[in-house]
Length: 305
Ligand code: GLU
Image (tube, rainbow, N blue to C red; front, side, top):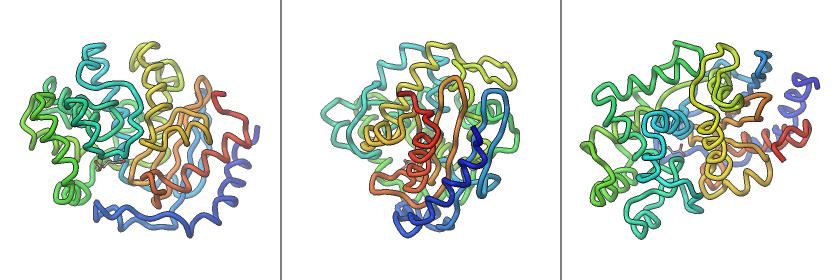
């Protein structure tokens, strides 16, 4: 299969969608992204790489960070983690408060904001003041690249405007599902969201999930096969908020999006893919990124179904 040619075809076919979608403005710094940016990277389990567009440009990974923090927390807490965060799709927007109230402060899954904030709280309990550095180190390990950091301006922008997330964490604290001081936890959460990565780094960082928990390029075991299966299942069922069903229907791969415009996807036993395009659809997922992945699975037949 000529993946370079397929990436070129995808790049041509997505051009007509650049007029659609919107930059997110509830985090003002994210509204400054370049609307015309597009990048797509594929890395196979045997290390072949295919890139198109601005694949060396860093962007804010936002909610893609939730996959890494959940992986780290699952490693340390195992099944105990599910007492504080569930594993069912929410069917609600990423920052919804409604469900959280009638389910007594236990978020539906780790990939909505409430669930990710609880996950970060769990990491804060283990790593204390070093929690953010541990998250960053973990991301450097899985992406095989030491050159990863967070963007202070994006962090400050979200800290000044993340009112909904403050509401979520306060509600969960009132239900005793946040153990550490809320200011500490929310800052770690906003920092992890403002980590900057390229599609190339992100594609590498997902390879362990395409390979039963082991990085195929370094042979390092990141987590066991059963946990890797569970994270892939969560990405398939919960990775795109209330559009998770639509993403599974159109793309047919486990994936996770972020409001920074990135999406990662896993083709089990074959490859990892990352796409970037900052304008979002109404569900808060990259509009062109979703379209590009749909075109990819249609053209290659490489979906899990
Ligand atoms: N930092 C964003 C928020 O908490 C993450 C949301 C996303 O990427 O979908 O609102």
